[in-house]
Length: 119
Image (cartoon, rainbow, N blue to C red):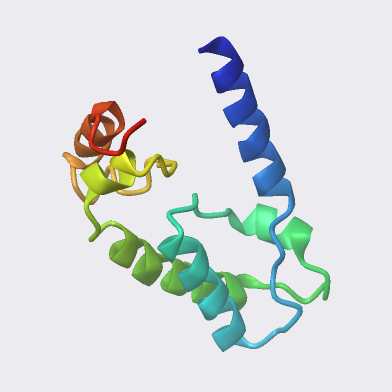
């Protein structure tokens, strides 16, 4: 169990470091990026984190707002799925639905503990 936790932590850290941000200063590109991140159930990136990853050097508050708007739409879609089935299939959950649906994490854990997925 301890090895699993360490491996999971390392995977999360490596996933966070390889986020590719848009090379564009178009709000629509940043909104699409946020939408994609939200739909995947990933944790919302801070403005400072995105500023650090920006390769154009032109990242600003307007682009962060576009990213945030897209992210919230994507997160809303992600949180509409069955948390139980998310757990059954063994996909990770990062807690992004906890303030939208107070039962999401509990349903996810029930799915993780279920034998329905053959795990």
